[in-house]
Amino acid sequence: HCTRIIPQAPKDLWNATATLDAAEMFESWALWSFQQLFIEYIASCSAHVHDDRLFKHFSANCQLGVKQYLIFIFASNSFEFVWRGVVDAHFPEFCRWVWGEETTCEEVFWRAEDHIVGALWYSCTIAIVAILRFEHAMTTELSPLRPK
Image (cartoon, one colour):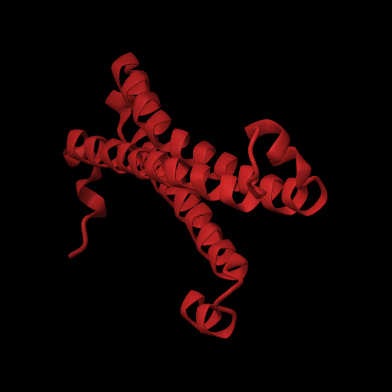
């Protein structure tokens, strides 16, 4: 979808970035749901881990690794919506007041966006590593789910 939007409006990438942001939000939700499905499966099928405190703490820690990405992606998209949709559209003088120099809100946003994107890469990496660690640690319990 983004590759169709970019050539149509090369000067306004808002639609393309909004589409990519929506895809990232879906990705984070899918990762969290996938991890939660594995945890629920093991808790319901394996009697020895159901009451195991170590499993509860380990699964909660792995789930936290995925949940931080989910929260961070939704927070960063909310920040973008507020910054571009409210501050830039209705209070453009706010950026000059905050930064103390002649700049546009879009320039300020793109500077902040560079840092946010870098942080999101790390956050996504933590989420994927958390899922991989859980799958590796629970290989025996998850073996019935293997593709045949």
